[in-house]
Length: 69
Image 1 (cartoon, rainbow, N blue to C red):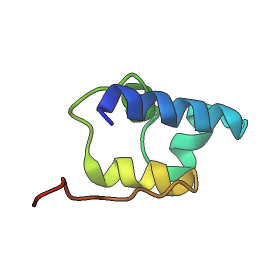
Image 2: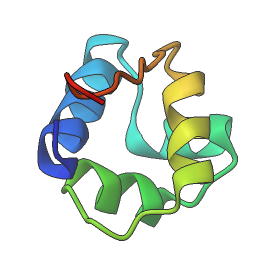
Image 3: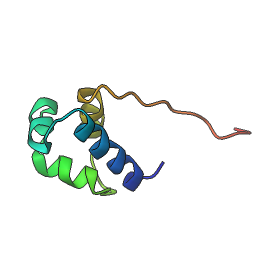
């Protein structure tokens, strides 16, 4: 999954939950601009803030190793 796909996923989940970008940003204690840029797929988002947004939405992520490593 790349940042564009992750941003689209976050936007879709936020909308599915009926939450505005402002509401999500306030609940995750990040700026609204951060949510906007994350949903747009900006590559330089801060990992800590991204994890707070995902946690606020109740989304967990799983890390996997590539085969053969």
